[in-house]
Amino acid sequence: MTVAARPDPVPVPEGLEVHVSPMRRRHLRAVLRIEAQVYPRPWSLGLFMSELALRGSRVYVVARVGGSVVGYGGVMLTGGDAHVTTLAVEPQWHRRKVGTRLLLTLARTAIARGAGALTLEVRMSNQPAQELYRGFGLQPAGVRKNYYVEVNEDALVMWAHDVQSEEYALRLDGLEAAVHPATVVEGVL
Amino acid sequence: MLILGIDTATQQVGCAIGGHEGVIASFQCARGRRHAEILTPAIEFVCRQSRLELQDMGVVAVDIGPGLFTGLRVGVATAKAIAHALRVPMIGVSSLDLVAFAVRYTPRLIVAVLDARRGELYYAFYRQVPGGVQRLSPYQIGSAEDVASELMASRQDCLVVGDGALRYADVFEDVAGTEFGEAVHAHPAASSLVELAHPQALREEFVNSWELRPLYLRKADAEINWEASGRR
Image 1 (cartoon, chains in turn orange, cyan):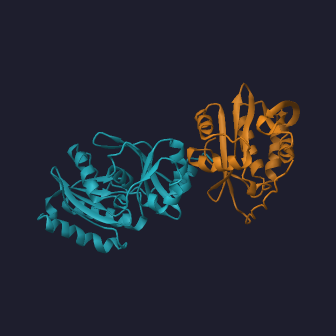
Image 2 (cartoon, chains in turn orange, brown; image 1 turned 90 degrees about the vertical axis):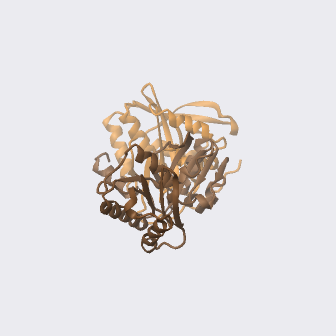
Image 3 (cartoon, rainbow over the protein chains, first blue to last red; image 1 turned 45 degrees about the vertical axis):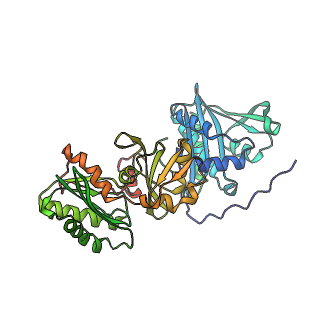
């Protein structure tokens, strides 16, 4: 198995702001471009459009730096659980806590909308992502065999329970405190 | 009722006279940006060539933008001054509506796109309806990438028209099903302004000169309003 070399991270000038805002149609071109770079089976335009149309049960956000979309993510809210459907950061912007910022916004929004637990699937081999999720209190809870058929790989299912608790709020505050400069959250999520 | 139309929202300066018989005279110049120097002699020129006096005008119509700040204010201020002096009412029409109106004979989704400078564009979506166009979106400001994304997401054949469409043609041309309006339609036309103002004048949809406001659409305004609403 080959592992693609990661491009060097873009140097971020001191104080450059990352803006997180609701995903809109005007972001979709950049989103699809990133999607094609990071997923072996990228979501289609139609899929993103139909997800965006489900305002009541979905939250999709983008992270932008200087007006350009550098990452995005979404959750599906069902029966008290918040299921992270996608989370991606442009490869050049990896290791810049963009994913942390996105997941923080998604988790907080889901909690505000009444979610009691967070869950997601992640590729077994995607260690950096699993590390990020562990930071958010997500624990391995099972395996879905051959979930990613396009790469013939299993998915690790992760869960974080009791996200409405005081303790979890403190955990999120801790994660946020480690992110510099602070994320600018725009728009009603 | 005769209508004097004034348009200075983009780098083009234009004025026209029209009424129930259509457009009687029009002038436009897209060269240079000395709006203040060109506009007044141009108004005098169209009046003289059509053998009319300024006093014959019953309405002053003006392009209220969005557009280039300085130019826009020249036209709006001149139009207000004339309307005030003649004691006639005014009609304000958006630059984007004018650009879309000029290409109303297409079944495609019409996207009017004007250059806002600083890498930004003013844009709005329209579709053809009997006798004109209907606006489908609010007036927006965004990057060429934003507009291209919206074109793609519309999943319809589009006609992108306006100086912004031509300036960022390289960004829009890789969106499938996109066609470009020609350079002749790149700026709002004063003749379109007079044509669009006429039915409004018949319906007496006027504003007073002291009530007319330009449509600046600056992002800063949106942010100020956002913060003022206390929703952050």
